[in-house]
Image 1 (cartoon, one colour):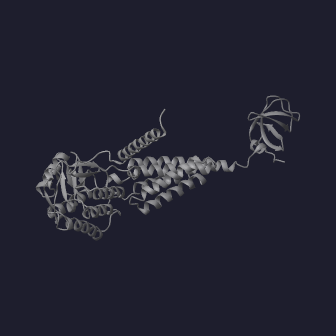
Image 2 (cartoon, one colour):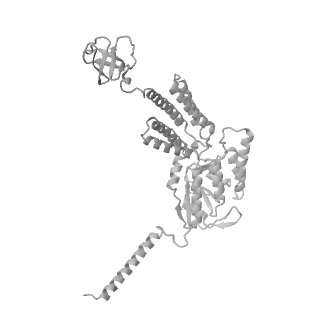
Image 3 (tube, rainbow, N blue to C red):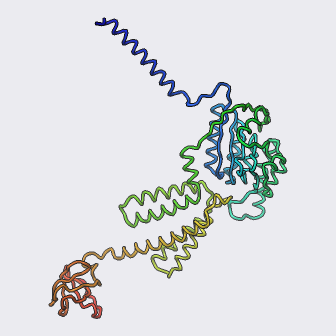
Amino acid sequence: MQSPKSTIGQTNVFRLWAALLFAAVLMAANSPAQSTPAGQPIVDKFVLNDTIQPVSAAELDRALAKANSDGAQALLIELNTPGGMLDTMRTMIGAILGSHVPVIIYVAPAGARAASAGFYLLESADVAAMAPGTNAGAAHVVSLIGKPDETEMQKIENDAEALLRSYVSKRGRSIDAATAAAASSHSYTAEEALNQHLVDLIASNETELLSQLDGRTITRLDGSKQTLRLANARIELVKPTLREELLSWLVDPNIALLFLVGGALLIYLEFNSPGTIVPGALGTLMVLLAIFAFNFLPIRYTAVLLLVAALVLMLLEAKFGGHGALAIAGVVCLAFGLLTLVAAPIPELAIHPALAIAVSAAFGLITVLLVRLALRARKRKHLLGADALIGSHASAMEPLNPDGHVLVEGEIWRAVAAEPVAPGAALRVVGHDRYLLRVELADAPHSPVAAA
């Protein structure tokens, strides 16, 4: 039999082991999944494989913030873009130029490009690099407001070229070659860009890129010198968040268009059949998401007026009937409105013409049919009970002399006729007296009797 002191001692030992085990588990849970060996540099990597629009700017800001906060030696941006919006490009350039961490922009993989606004981004980096088989340039500014006059367009071009010159010279790159890409849409292969002093090096992959940059001294925008220490650097990918992935998908103008049209039809179904809830809720969500997406894109307000005019014309066609003329005009307005809705600087940010025409035709047809059905239903809404049977065909179930039973639309009613009727005779309902129908022979001259 154990003594009380022995039992207390064992209890204390058990508690000590439990405390040590809990502490070990807690330390394991809080420790990072991957540890970085002491002295190993970190390079954060951000992949920009999309158009340049506000979502891209938000992703770049988050990548720069992470690189600055985790002590990375540099932020590596793998670039492949057809270009994008001028205002967003300026915002991203400002973020790159103001970064405390050196920014390396690498046009990759083979077949990638840094076109239009992407060329401006490439030249803003502390280190500009390209992979073999890539190209950059074609950076001439495209107006978002249709076709401005010559003076206005010259102002836009001069402003963009001045922005490019303001940092290209500080990066030690060729101003003449850079302005040629902006002024005349000249495009360069990787080898041509290197020979023209537009990029600093050509590398086949990231490992070769970091190996060439290790020990290289770069000049920051403020004139200070910094030596890159990238030997055996570990690359950490900055993955997009779920929100950023959803926004990138939604900002596609073709997706936003389908959400807008589909949501509008669902909302109409809800108004036409109140109480169904699901179409109205889903349609409202889709329309709000579409408006949210279009808010990120440059919208022409004249195109919005065309969309409103198209809707009005379709409603007039359904209500009054114009032998299709109003509906056709509405579809044409809708098609032109959708085609010009987004003032896209590049084709990737524009609504696809085939989709715009298909949606216009389908939406016009569906809208006219639904509105006509709704108007017919509203006109017949007051016809209930015996009122709804006036004009219907009936069949005599027994002799009517003068009254008897008839079959009307699958229902048996009592009816009275002005003259004797043989069983099985074809009749027509011409009126009623409460629940007593008034009928006559179907081949008799139509002379409906007012309901009593």
